[in-house]
Image (cartoon, rainbow, N blue to C red):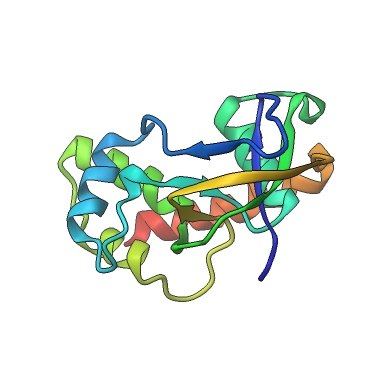
Length: 158
């Protein structure tokens, strides 16, 4: 199985576990939960990454940190339930709040087609295996500012 990673500003103990917390995207979660073809609820999931670079980029964006040296990245143990494009969640949150069309976004979230660059991997919880060095700002630049921008453009077009 491919290693999975979680990035945060918090220091976590090896062997500790983490489950789902409060959602930052309640409108998107509600729309996605209602259409889940797998019985997986996004609102009850934790979100992790498939690489150290992705975990670092995700944490840097989520916590709005200017310096990656303040981040903690952990290799984790988790059974992945679904992988989906993060840009869809952001676009879906805007559209649901604004009354826009969401059907194509919801379908693409649950059954992604084509290439998406920045994906979240869902699970019900995970256990910390070890801390690993966070990726540098230079290592995450392309993912955060170029590839994620392409994902955002694609999500807007759906």
